[in-house]
Image (tube, rainbow, N blue to C red):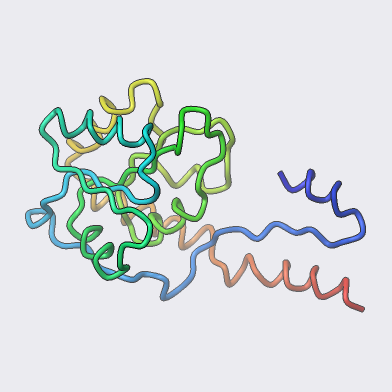
Length: 182
């Protein structure tokens, strides 16, 4: 999408700021697996589309928590620490752009995420579990049954930490942006 912005702003430096690993970003720690009592956790606007997925999971007997905007961070972090699988759902069936910030947050906190596959790709795609929209509920249930969720999520975070450190990604961007000032 950066090329479109460059075309709109030909006389301005348009640079891509990646979502990389930031030391000290983590805001909560997970409870041990045996203490987790929320099967699926999501947050954001509870649109009709998202509500349909939540209802389908609840109908199958799963405990689902979906915190909406305005919910206090400390309560949201408590719910996340108690959750087995985090949901990253589209706002609507036609939504083609993933929430990269939500993906980043989940990766940094080593959340095991069921991420609905989007039409557009993003640099964080290698670090999330993509599930097809058509069979999302079935695939989400399969993700819930994965026995090593914590170990897998921590492994993804370790890989992300090594491959995408902001301490390496940010200096070239700063250099390029500052070079336009002189």
